[in-house]
Image 1: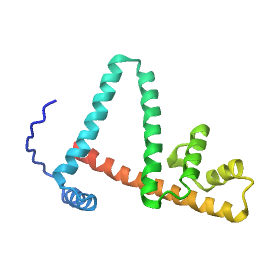
Image 2 (image 1 turned 135 degrees about the vertical axis):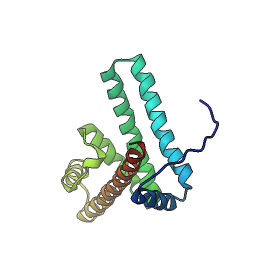
Image 3 (image 1 turned 30 degrees about the vertical axis):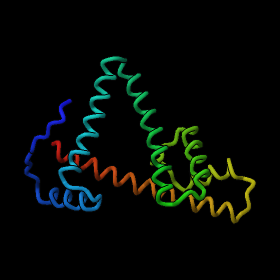
Image 4 (image 1 turned 180 degrees about the vertical axis):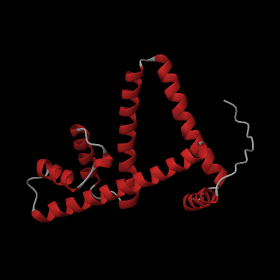
Length: 164
C-alpha cells in the first residue's frame, strides 16, 4: 500500500460541511485527518473481509468476524467506561458483560429488566444498599453504551453520506 498523499476536494451540502466542522472540533482533529481516519478504518475492514472471504466460506467468515467484533466491542466498552468512571466497580461491569455474552445479549440491548435479571442471578446475597449501588452503576454503564452507540451511528452516517 502506498503511503503517498493525494489531495482530494469534495463538494458537500452545507449541513454535512457543518457537521464535519463540528465533529472535527469535538474530536479535536483536523477535518482531513478525521476523514482519513474514518476512510482508513473502512478500508481496513473492507480489506480484511475481502481477504477472509477469498480464503473461507462466507458463513464461516461472517460468524468469525461478528464474534471478534463483539469481543472487541466489549473490551473497548470496559476500557472506555473505565476512563470516564474510574476503576470503581469495573469488576462488576466485566462480570455483567460476561453474563450478557453467556446469554447472547448484545451491549446495545441493555435495559433495566436485563440489569435486574443479572443482579438477581449473580448478586442475590448482597444488602439492599449494595444492590442499589450496583444497579445504579449498571444503569450508568447502559447509558454510556447508548451514548457511545449514538456517536458510532452518527459517524457511520457521516461516512455513508461521504461515500454516496
